[in-house]
Amino acid sequence: MPRRAKSSSIKNLPPSRSHKKEDILLNVLHKAQQEHGYLSEHVLKQISIEYDIPIARLWGVVKFYTKFRTEPVGRYVIEICTSPSCVLNNGLTVEEHLKQLIGARSGQTSKDGLFTIYRSSCIGCCDEAPAMLINGKPYTRLTVERVTNIINRLREEHANIKADKP
Ligand code: FES
Image (cartoon, rainbow, N blue to C red; front, side, top):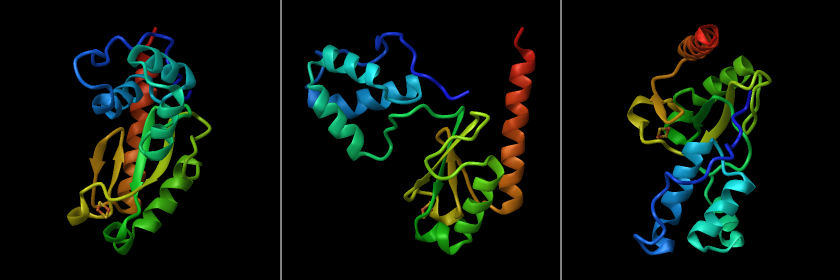
């Protein structure tokens, strides 16, 4: 199932009075996204109140940076690099295969709710291209076979977690 923003507070975020608001805005949004999976309207309203920042300003920042998400995402967020080094090293073939494997297009979540895939600019692994991030962890030297193994392993991992739950 896609991760839903929790209704919990934003108590783990940096205190609003310790720095200038604008200086810490990106950090606050990033941490909120890590905690909730995405930046829902509810979460942005909480941040707006806590940090006394107009909600329109928050939406402007969130929409400007492609790293911020405003929709629920899957358990595993895949960011496949489509910058030149990766593309020149068969990255588009790998991306296409990956999308077929999970059954979702860029910006979509798979029907089982496990995977959300996005295209990304360079993630700093050009010397080991093609590359992607899954939940922030880099996977490099990707091939069709390697991507298949990675996705199968994550599906297994998820099935085991579900089986362990009472
Ligand atoms: S171009 Fe893909 S990691 Fe740099």
